[in-house]
Amino acid sequence: MFKRRQRLKTNDSWAQPYPKGGPSFRIIGFKDGISLVYFDVKTFADIIIAEYCLREIVQREQTLKNKIRIIQKIGTPEDLKKQAEQNKQAREILRRYSEAEYKLYGAEVRLPIGTVHKEYHSLRQSSTWYLRQELVDDCAKRGGCCSRNCGCCQTRHEQAVRNKGLGHCTPSCGCCASERGFEYSAKETQSFVNDLKARLYSDSPAYTVQMVEAFFLLPSVDKGLFRTIRKLRVKKKKKTTMKETQPSVQMILCVGAMLLAAGGPPSLSVYTSCP
Ligand SMILES: [Zn+2]
Ligand SMILES: [Zn+2]
Ligand SMILES: [Zn+2]
Image 1 (cartoon, helix red, strand yellow):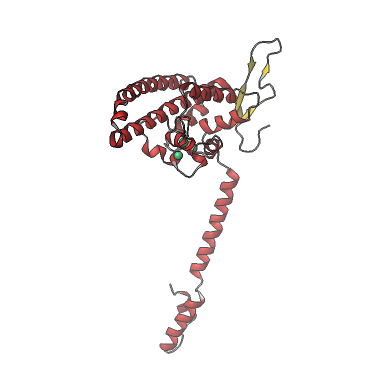
Image 2 (cartoon, rainbow, N blue to C red; image 1 turned 45 degrees about the horizontal axis):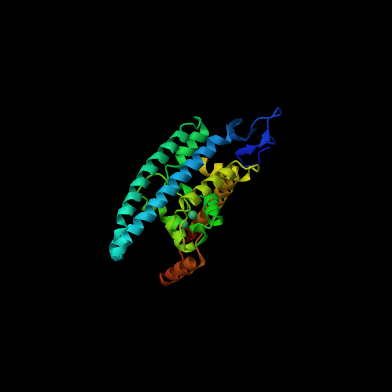
């Protein structure tokens, strides 16, 4: 059964092989109104992984640009000699970006048309979509910038030069590399992608469900919470209206003093009609 506000569901057959052998399968059910729509987890995993790869390239590019900028400003003649190599790396990154962008596009077009498709694209209309609590927590747990006070992830969307590949830290984040004191090799970076893939296809669906919710669905609206807020607003409004119509003690004293000075109160209606 779905809990209140829960929109994704896996069943007992998660990661179980078919009865007569064959590959195990992982299916996520999405509650769309009163019907349940089933998705092969691959549909989601391919997009999450493609987006991660694009993000890794964007952060690698940013780190390299920062290095080139520093070398141009304060680099030694020896450093300047490395510039040709860095320019070659920059060209390679451009090629990889283009490939990764196309791969993401290929994964996105396989997302079936429907509510999930609509919410996925609506979510990305905001450049800060990735700052959802689940993704911030995930970045912090992985030791990314969200685990420190540098604020890189919070401002990344303001400094982005590309409209894709926005998100939390990958092994290529320059700030994380300075924090740990070394950079990962290409082989090590690839091992992080493999690790993400293993987590998404894990025998336990908890991480996958959490990531699918954060990457694909708009934040769910708690109708109960909305009702409570509306009630509180109505109560507050009533209180304010009563306050406005009832003269305060200071106002009565003030008007009383004015009337005494003018020779006494003429009638009660003068009191109540005071602003
Ligand atoms: Zn940082
Ligand atoms: Zn970072
Ligand atoms: Zn982060």
